[in-house]
Image 1 (cartoon, rainbow, N blue to C red):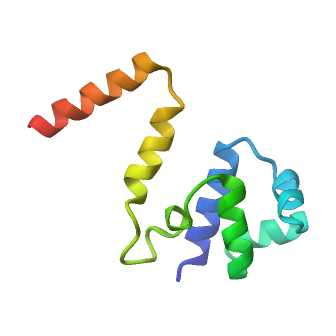
Image 2 (image 1 turned 30 degrees about the vertical axis):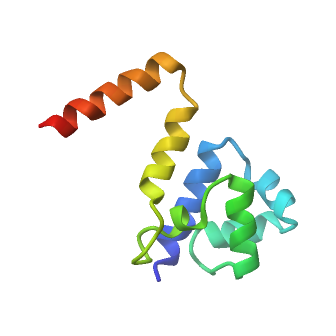
Length: 105
């Protein structure tokens, strides 16, 4: 298992959500240093910690693991849906039209 890739994905998701390491650690009742160790891939989180991380980040666990498991639920479409749903309606429609055009080719 590529702990560095998983840690990097956790960090990228945290940063994309605008959550500091300190706030993330506090929400998980962990030290900032422990979060850093996980995000750098030095150590894997316990299962309970990993699930709590996904919950705090508001993402599915498989979206953090998608490249290390063979049968993830449709995390790509889930991530796309979450990203697109945060945009204004005109932007959502623009993206939908672009996807439709790509699929027609």
